[in-house]
Amino acid sequence: MLRQVAEGVLVHESVFVQTNAVVVEGRAGVLLVDPGVTAAELDCLVSDLSELGHTVVAGFSTHPHWDHLLWHAGFGDVPRHGTAACAAAAREELSDPDAKARIADHLLETEIAGQVPLDLLGLVTGLPAGAARVPWDGPEIRVIEHRAHAPGHAALLIGERGVLIAGDMLSDVLVPMLEHDTADPVDDYLAALRLLESAAGDADVVIPGHGSVGGPGQARARIDLDRAYVHGLRNGHVPDDPRIGPSAKPGWEWVSDVHEGQLRYLSR
Image (cartoon, rainbow, N blue to C red; front, side):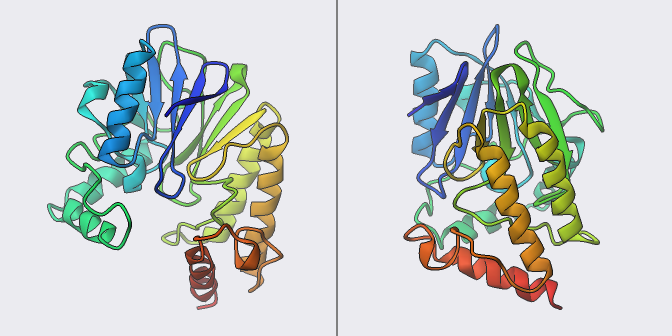
């Protein structure tokens, strides 16, 4: 079910890893960011938008991971945007005819096995390289592109509504997950946090790709938490972090496995 988190901004939270789909109201319709995740949830989102009298006029994928590349025919055949690098990465992965089968096999290990529609996966058109704004008839949305977590990852800042859509960063339940296929994933992540920090002063609401929506002051607090975590990874340990260990959310023990895996990767 959609819930309003700021003027003209609504969120639908999936049962899968608290994945957030974001609806931004414009003049002629809505922009839909990272819709997901199960077929039933996408059906629900279509129904909710219809009941509110909203028409989807555009989509946006914050980065090229499968759970941020989903779509539903009920949203319509409208432009689906991403950064140039995001679209290129999605296109490269889906050029392999076995890509969707691999994703489906991966999902067999989860509680949503067989429930994710992949037929419209990844049909994203890249914005011009370096594009600074989302092209649509609505409030100005600034594109904050970086290389942390995934190629062409972008956060979106809706300045006039005080909202920062962070993609897969600034989560209160997931630790930072680095993009390992770069020369220096730690520096890339820290650079991305600096970019988000420069935008955080205009944000009263932060919406992570996974986790709880944060209110005033939460964007900066989560940036500080993520920065401390990443510095800890670089130094071969981690400070006291509520997202891992005994204080972590029940049922999210696998986050500790992610942390240990990243430590092993960086210590190679």
